[in-house]
Length: 187
Image (tube, rainbow, N blue to C red; front, side, top):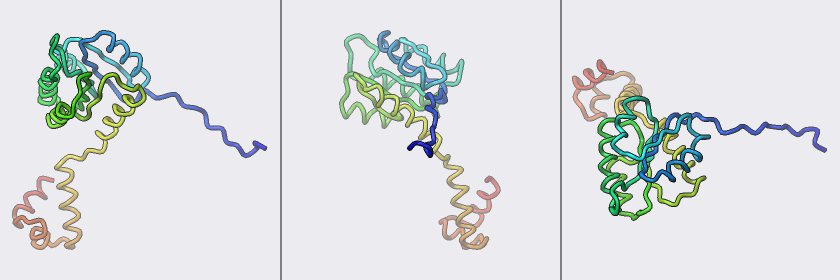
C-alpha cells in the first residue's frame, strides 16, 4: 500500500537570517524574544538601552532591528522609537527596522513607515505571525534593486529595442544623446 511513498525528512528551521538586534526597555520581552527568535536567526542581540543601538551596530553587522517605540516612563506616544528609527536609518540606511509597541494606532504606524520602518507589530504579538513578518522583511530586502541597476537595465532594454541607435534610444528615454552616452560610460 505504501511502496511508492517517498519520505522527505523534516528539516529543522535553518538559522539563515543573520543577526537581529532587539531593543526594548522590558527585560521580560527581551528574554521572550531571545527564546522565540533563537531558532530563526544566527544571532539574537538584545538591549534595554536605546543608547547602545548605534554602538552595537558599529561593532558587528546587524541584518534587522526590532525596535520598541517607547522608552520613557509613562510616555507612550512613540516619539522615542521614531527618534531612534531616524538615527538608525541615517547611519545604516540598508538595515531594515521593524517597530513594535503596545500603544498602537494607525497614525503611529503611518509615521513609522514614513520614517523608514519596514513593518509595524503590536504587543502582545502572535509568535508565528511575528516570525513570519521578520522573515518576510528580510526576504523582501533581497528583492530590492538599486536605482543604478534599474537605470542600467532600462537603458539596455531601450537600446536593444532601438537596435543600438543612440539617437532613437535617447528620444525614447527623454534625454539627449550626449546624456545617454555619458550614462552608458558610467554604467
